[in-house]
Length: 470
Image (cartoon, rainbow, N blue to C red; front, side, top):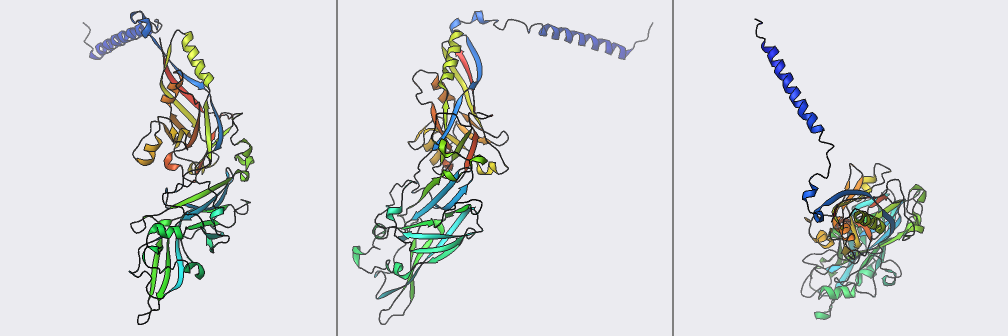
């Protein structure tokens, strides 16, 4: 008798198990050729669906300008200066602020026999852009003949020229890396702020009375840059939360000590200065862009007769992209469904992908982190996937639209499912062209994005996943 070999028996059982598994696998593989419509005869024909993914939908791109923004009451840090970006040309900012007296020294206002000594303004600057090694001249003008009330709505394209004094009341040289600066106004200008009238006739009786008499100050760079190879210019923020004007005076009344005193006039909103207004003006000149380096061509701004290879997006009332979904592609998908015997198209997801042009390591730093799509930004009409009001007032609001820049993929990705679904329902979408702009939180940012357009090697891609329903 052959002795029992335990390992041999184990191998035999293992081989048998492998043969069994192999047989089952072969049986399963033989099922792969089975009719994929198996079981459909049990489903009513009206309920049979067909699912498809279409990535050939064409999105045409152009670019135009936003024209203007409301800049009053939105910031304590208005922009000031002028700067040339080789891709988007020159932008120039002017800054306005009113002055608000922060209380009175005594019931007699300035006391008996007041004498003005001087008037100074302590300025604070932040967020420097451009060539900070050069010295620039900043002019301060007195605003005349127009009272910009704190409830005023001021747009960025306002022409301030008719409201300014013929000459600046003060000019000073400024280097872009200075965070604090003190200026001294001429004594003649300082004396305008002395009013010792008693009662309500005094301009210091209320903030509104004071501002009606003293209409505010306007800051602007004296010389705009014209050659970026020599001087690209500079833009800074005038930080009004740290800016204050002071009227220095003393009294010469008999029998009293000649004591210097100060009347503060603040330029920011506070309990002592509730009637505050600041805004900034914006002017673009796109003729300073370098077309050879990929800059915007001014001849094509607003031209929608031909697709563009680049789609530009700027903040601060600059360039906006225009996106137009080809309605013929929608008709093509409808006809495809109809030819297969289906009556409706149900969109599960419509994802728009737009690729960022990355010509250098700093491109991501200059580009917007989030973009939004709107029917009309200035009219407050937006895609239902993106509530512009909620996004502006509620920091925790999360839009289903998306629009975030994927750094790993170099793409902006939008979920426009509801918008595209309405295209498949007759008469629901009449506007196939939308605006591509920064998200509301970034609309006042000095940034810009360059995105591949529809006439480029990497055109926008609209991927539609849908079902066809009978």
